[in-house]
Length: 242
Image 1 (cartoon, rainbow, N blue to C red):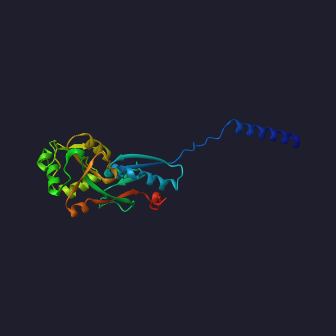
Image 2: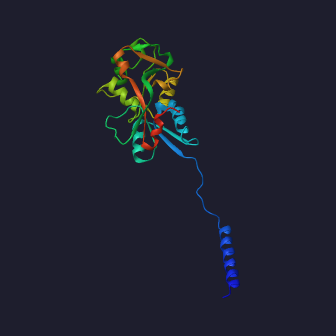
Image 3: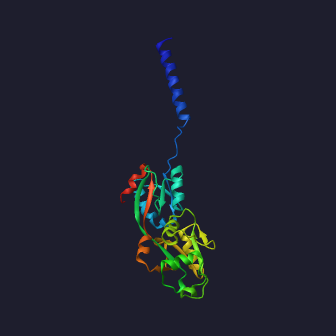
């Protein structure tokens, strides 16, 4: 084979290779914003903007997906890899050391009542008796002639866990209580139903319900809590302010 023929054949081969590259587009993965899955305490929903700001400071185009549930569910989904950040309003003492625990703020569990109940404060024993179902009408406590409608949170709620430890002790909430899946649902129910009473984190309270004061300082202090996010080490940057 002459050099000219080899060169010619080589040129043809090069052209064919270049044509093949042109005809076969390079497959690339689509550029999608990262998705950060936030699951847990619905009482912590008001803190979501701050969490979003902390994430955005490091991941500017992060897609935050928030699912309000409860503290226990948030931690379970985090452990299963189905969540990136758990919102926890009542930190379990046996939480694994593998997680990064970041305080996000302070809050209080408060008792909320229908606005026209006309009872301003009660002692802890009366609050417990209300939720045990021993009182059936607000007149028994100096209030209006409204039936007492109990509202509680579902099992797994950190707010429920703290309320039961401090207020109920070993006594259960009456089975007649309406069980709500979120703090927002508790507030909405209480504001719309005569005589309703429930408990939520103070952060979610609006001006359409009234807070019933507990006239015992020690009990009030015991209902104070720190709110946390729990996450893996790759999100440890959330410890800093945005």
